[in-house]
Image 1 (cartoon, rainbow, N blue to C red):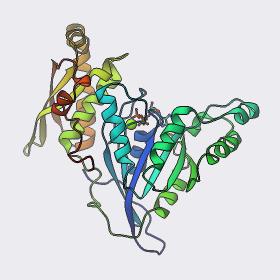
Image 2 (cartoon, rainbow, N blue to C red):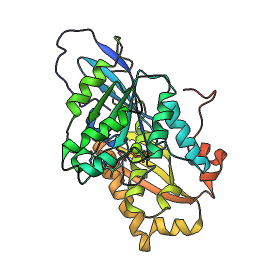
Image 3 (cartoon, rainbow, N blue to C red):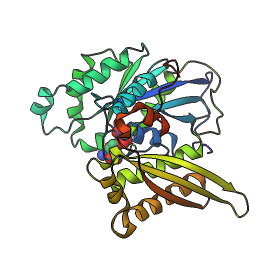
Image 4 (tube, rainbow, N blue to C red):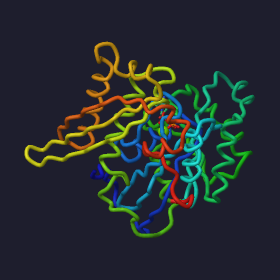
Length: 325
Ligand SMILES: Nc1nc2c(ncn2[C@@H]2O[C@H](COP(=O)(O)OP(=O)(O)OP(=O)(O)O)[C@@H](O)[C@H]2O)c(=O)[nH]1
Ligand SMILES: [Mg+2]
């Protein structure tokens, strides 16, 4: 996948490069921000919390710097084996980096009194505590500011957060309305060490198309299925064949569910739901590759896979050997 971003030439100064983790509670907008910064919908984003399950590197290359952005799962109190895996992934993502962006949602406040009374919630404070363990400087990114009608109400919010930690900077942004992203770019660039690019500047991601194809299917599962069902689904890609002439990809993938009753829901009446998922996923994969593709989906019951680390590993969610990676 080639980089779509082209930036201004640096106004003097040496080239900078480093690792930047995007961390925070579930659903605060980490994946959406990564996509906005690198200019491609690589990371799965959805209205449901706990969408991201694994770390993903998005490579943000400009003429002045290369920031390797690490999208991480939301930090939350984990119960199932899958959720523990996700939170461990998030903590690993914030370790050994040059800069952490801690994302927190801008509260929707009506007036000054509400703003003065506002405090960061327990979960947000736990996320702050988790990301400071790694020792890297932390930038607080207040997300979704488009939802706050009166921007001056941000000031008490920033003051409350700043009382908890000495942030390297505080940047309010809206990834969907492109607000504050230039300022964030400056802050990120300034937080990177001088160095050479860590990844090929033409690459956008550390994952191959096979992995992204699976994620696109999972994104459509999150979009088309309701209630708890998306959380019971995993996607594996059985084969990914690239044909040169005419250019076309043929992909076979499996949607795993936990119970027989869920299989029927994923397929839908007369196969309607699975057809919709397949059509949308095919379009999203085509968008990423720029080539036509055929996508064949199968639904399979892998009983209680979210509770069993061995089954999870078979579906691609394995802890790295030795704890680090
Ligand atoms: N209004 C508004 N909505 C946003 C913005 N950024 C993200 N969202 C929405 O917030 C929801 C969650 O976004 P994600 O990017 O999936 O959040 P996340 O932090 O990656 O979530 P997890 O992976 O579940 O931890 C989606 O419905 C997004 O469209 C923003 O700037 N403004
Ligand atoms: Mg995410």
